[in-house]
Image (cartoon, rainbow, N blue to C red):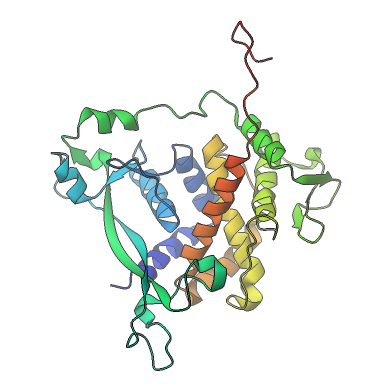
Length: 316
């Protein structure tokens, strides 16, 4: 089974529905939390997050908690007959035997590197083996222990805060230089500045925040931070690929703070370029999703803390 191609085809099908459709589905699902394993509690990563988010919305699942068939059985539970699992990918870095791959020493087509150089995190003599696994949502499983089913209903930690506050905490905490008065939103890497139109040029404060957070994901790629660089891999499509990273990263961030109905203004034109990249590189979505996850984690880690409470319990 060509797992990379199967998952890439699924992501392409999502994107082909149009920017408003997939963005709303991903951010709405993200507002329920990052998908996690119901047994280990570990969060899912990369492209698997997109697949599970999309399935949760399409099938109406209330919780982003998932298990393999074997894990459910190990908990004394049973996946209901006829339920469909979601195909996901597991990557494991392995050393390449001398006989593996082509005559030139390159990895075989079934197991090619996810990335080149530093971003892959491995040596030239290793490759990323991609293996399939399947997950079921807890809504598809009967007989789960109370601690698993009950944990899924736990409230989100951001539920008592406004999405606008969340956006401001991230933008302020990252300390990015933001300048207004420009015709369109952009990140200027050489000057290391986020350029924004004045706020009254946006359709709503939510649209302003969503657009600013999109540019903040670009900001994380600066050499002094995450240092995103694609080398020759994407050629002329490198700029469009960086936009895909920002699209995914901003979906993670917007979902985290519950800003699910906002429009990222001026970014719909890249959709065709993203589709072209994915159709020509079956590993591209895995690279984009991983880099987007790194950006999301950096932004969240730098959020401004809560204001200290007074003796009465009110913020100072």
